[in-house]
Length: 123
Image (cartoon, rainbow, N blue to C red):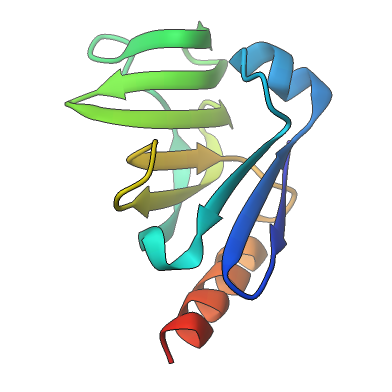
């Protein structure tokens, strides 16, 4: 599970120990400037298209779990999700990842928090 923390100008994604191991991500957090987020929404049935995506590095058990870095249709995506369950999707500009897709305790509440923070930064 990923925990979200918002600072006045940054979104910090904190990966739990198990998720960090599955994703083979060396750091426990990902930080994204709010100004780099171009779109945020919830995908109610998030999944990685295993026929098109290249995993490097990470874990992918089709239909079960996707965690780590995936290259899909020319985009670098960080995923931490249980396939077929809701996930928060963040599209980014000018960052290491083009997209981040993560599961949280309450993706809809977290989406509202992220959108409000983006609106406040852009005001």
